[in-house]
Image 1 (cartoon, helix red, strand yellow):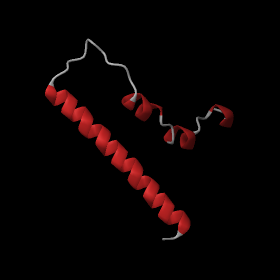
Image 2 (tube, rainbow, N blue to C red):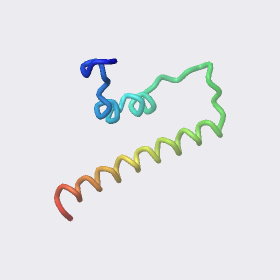
Image 3 (cartoon, one colour):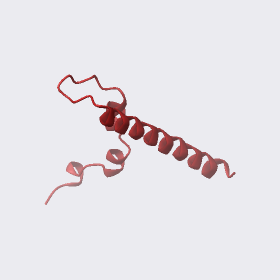
Length: 67
């Protein structure tokens, strides 16, 4: 049986933004294909992530300030 100290902190893991930041600020990999479809897909993904984060901030603002 595991002790409580070795149990991972799930809330802390849930709010980690490492993967999101790496997605936006990674170096170009020359071995990765660079076709229009791939670039378009990544651009749409970046836009959707940004829209999600902005909407999340708006929802939190409305919740905190009671708009």
